[in-house]
Picture 1 (cartoon, helix red, strand yellow):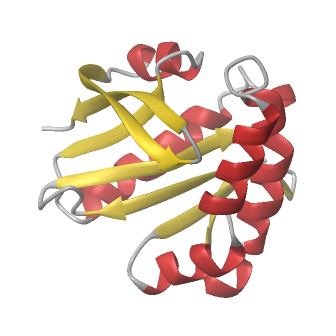
Picture 2: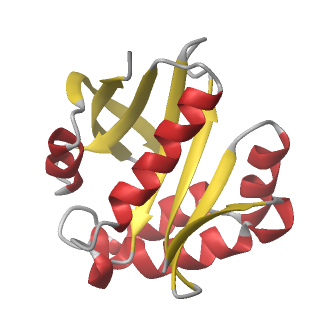
Length: 165
């Protein structure tokens, strides 16, 4: 049985754990090990994740038969009202093509509808295979940006959106 479970502040360490399993595999052909480590420390620090929950970010796990297989991190009203921002949507690499990413995306859509938000918004690395997943799900590329994250590292992203209404 597949289910999504919302995480509280006390549970975000699970996101940290999954990210450390997923990222080294998912980004090994795109980013250096040093950049992966830097980004994991920056984006998935447990204290940072806890602070995000306190200011309104929502985190979900997708579980299959009680075992965590991936996670979703979203923020309502980003960059302004009417948007739901997907900051994080990851599934363990050996669990790809099983519909779990779609389950997480559907969770984001459900939250957007519950909050009467009309657009999903995300950034994805331009060289990531996930671009095809998002396009398959109806997202459109609306722009590109290179974000300087320090230490001479950049996030080379597409900006993608899905209009819900």
